Image (cartoon, rainbow, N blue to C red; front, side, top):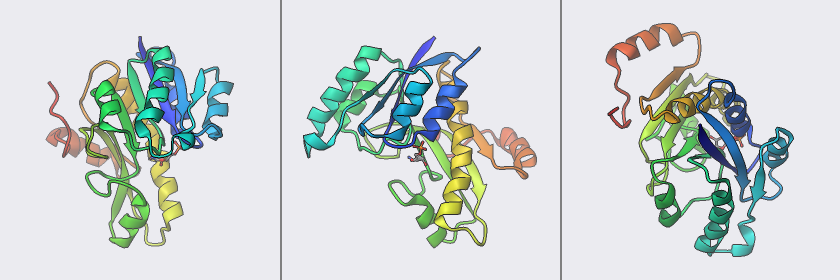
Length: 221
Ligand code: GRF
């Protein structure tokens, strides 16, 4: 059974979906929810589900990222996780921290990477007039939002979409994508997960299964 630590900064809706998915025959269990924000609402939600929590406030450390990360790592190591899931964790991690967990740290990003790494992804998709948007789960490497892709979910951009309505549609797919990717990753299956928001799902998935390949993903061993 794999041990999973989840890192959050805010409300933790993705964290809740991950925790809810890790039951029954799932190959992993949550052992810790950690945050850089002691007042993150997600910490209370995780505690209410009986998941151990911890917080290391990054603010007192100012620009000393290494010192903040050293404290955070000490807390994480107490739980001895096999896998780290970044779920709305809004601190950029240093290469030193990433190296320690390389190959076993995942992140969810609200765009169809490699498009729109960084912030304000929905506003940028709308400004570009994109017909589709979505989210990506990828392995975390020292290149921000550029690690091997493990899954993507696509949604249509609607003519009257605002940043808020598009973000809500993408978030719904995030909640399906991240648990699906984690279930595969926990058994060492790196085949990318591809999700489409209904109704186009069935037909498109048949075609995708035929083509198989997903851009930017690591070829399965
Ligand atoms: C999500 O949209 C995630 O993709 C982004 O931050 C948001 C966090 O949401 N990185 P939540 O805290 O999981 O609700």
